[in-house]
Length: 139
Image (cartoon, rainbow, N blue to C red; front, side, top):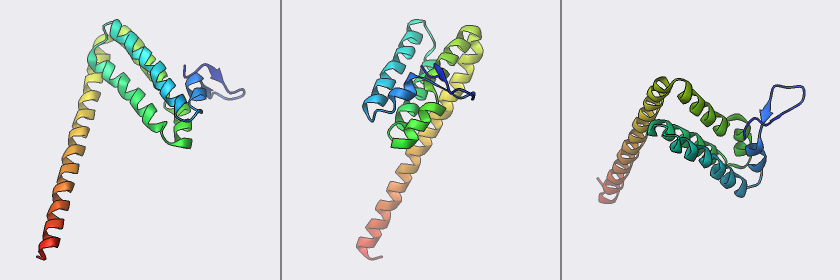
């Protein structure tokens, strides 16, 4: 899906995902839908949740980057979420414990980053409300 074709004279490869991503909106939605099939197959194979979450993260990054007109199209040729997910799946089949440990670590780091962002947004909101309160009070 990500490496089906090679640009002649180069080592650059692209796939159907990059081509359908060129269609605004619909292409990225269709690409994410097709990508979710890989995750579904992995779940049916009994792949651990930490690896499934990492696979979903790869698809989410691809879909989020796809929102931006030119950047999204370029990201389809660079990020290659489907290639990453198939590699994760193959790595799990070859070395299940190593892949599972690495994926748990990755999911943990992402979780900590999300918590950090939520705390920062909360702190910013509190400081903004405090500033507004003192501005209205005149102190």
